[in-house]
Image (cartoon, one colour):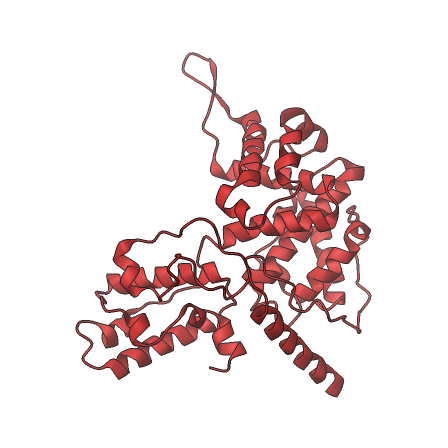
Length: 368
């Protein structure tokens, strides 16, 4: 029991050290916000880029630790995927999704790593099978087996729920092409390898070189079934839905993962995932009316206003870790909600609320 407590203390120390001592490069593009919300945003540097709270590609905070009480997984024996091909990566995923931390590190570390593991597992397995998807029955067995393997190495036992992942994430979904030969006949695979074989983790989010190549390839695959017949019986191209393009992009990513070593594939997929997750605020912003009651109008009572803001932000801090850009997006989103409730004063400045206060770091790491 004492040993387990000591291990948790080591975990916490490593987590603090890793996040506090890792810096990321500034993004080269400016971040633009609605001018109506500017007065409600926390003060940021003159360049328009906030000082980083967390790196753009979050590290594996628990990676120096090795789980010692591994348990033998109970596998179905029905999954055809090659788990041995990504043995090292599964160990890293188990660490990134360690039991107690997985819910809090979900959107920054655990889920991007878990999703990348699935993509690379199918991609590496396709070297033998030539298939880039599983049928629904096989997908169910394989996802269950992966869960068992990860849990045996210390991962949380609810990863599917935490990351909103199910067997359908291992199928082709709505993409009409699902095999290696089909992709290599239909898309410019050389272009994908040139643009996505190695990506600049900062510039990719601005220039979208690899993302554009993937989208182009996905459109090529999606176009296979995007034809309708008009009133004259003539076959014409139809509009391709975003869902089909997204599903085909997943197929292309699996193909790319089959052409790269697992470590390189992970860097690419995690980098692309961070470009997407940094665009939005992952927090659930509850109703701001309690804040509006204390901070509306001319703010006759600053103390009650800041108590209301402090309570609201405290609720946000319990949800998840954030990257620096996610925190900025959350600050902007909350600012817009406050404006809709006729709060025009800079309550962030008034109550000394910074970007860091939007993350679990402020609550869990600094004891606020």
